[in-house]
Amino acid sequence: MSSQLRPLAPLAENPKLKSGPGSSNSTAPGQNSRRASHSSSGRPDPLGTEVHLSASRIGPGVIPTGRMDVVPHEELSPEEKAKRLAAYAAVDEHVKDFHKVLGIGSGSTVPYVVERLCQPPHCYANSDRWYVPTGFQSKELIVKAGLNLGDVDQFPTIDVTIDGADEVDDELNAIKGGGACQLREKVLAEAATHFIIVADSRKDSHVLGQTWKQGVPIEVAPFAWAKVFVNLQKMGCEKPTLRMGKMKAGPVVTDNGNFVIDAVFSEPYMRDPAELLHRIKMLTGVLEVGLFVGMAEAAYFGYPDGTVMARWQDGRREQVDATKGLEIAESGKRV
Ligand SMILES: O=C(CO)[C@H](O)[C@H](O)COP(=O)(O)O
Picture 1 (spheres, rainbow, N blue to C red):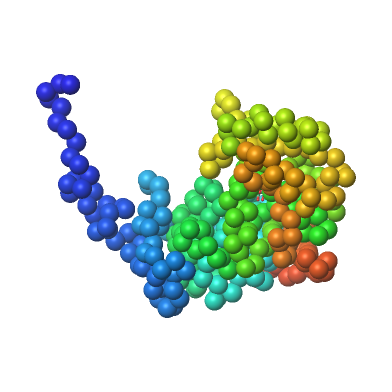
Picture 2 (cartoon, rainbow, N blue to C red):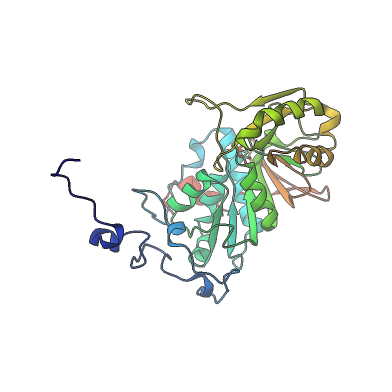
């Protein structure tokens, strides 16, 4: 080593870092220095622990504005309009002021959920509310919107989780994991008192596998993928595929460091998703299966004609008004 080089100061002695993010001296923006154990509402933190500072704000250059840019509704494609309307309707019908912990799913519909939550009247409850993400994408959404970021180990009980889906059948069973987030998505769906799905009308189906032809996404431990692959074939899977990365050599690696196998099963299997789920989950090396059976309380589907259809677990269907938040969206204002 050259004698010109001086060793780096240990982190604790570096004065620049003492007041930086993550330090115990720092007062980061928003609620970082607040103890979750005694929120301003007096609601105790379920684990009685102090919030991890590192979990509150992430990423270099990320400035939590507490605001979101809203694309004027007319500028969106019919599919995007449908997603926005479904998301707005679900938020308006299911998120109440007294809900203090919300789970945020993954995919292209969920940003509209966060968008609505940043608008009146929902935004007035945000300073005292915690948001738990299902993966990197939703974590970014939460942080960039300046919302309080939490994790499921702080909040193992969530009031409402709202998430997208790849396909939803007549009984509100769903295929999820098109974005490879199914493990965390299922943990947050299960942790939630109310689990609500938002999607555009293309996901509204009768039997799983009718519209989502890619197969059931299965998260597997990397070293076990080939064994699970062969066992899926033995189980009757027509076409297992190890999901490969785009612009990356090799397989997709999930937020949890695992691989994903997409497994196509024929209709008789898909007509009994509970049985299929249990059989796949019993394969050693499988961490989670993208079949969400009996979990959703309601699903909201946006249609290109601007209507939103809500479906309930008991089979009820009703058209709902999704226009409350559109005044803001149409103006394209920052909220
Ligand atoms: O399960 C998911 C990610 O793992 C998504 O929720 C699902 O793929 C739906 O995404 P989108 O809203 O883009 O249609």
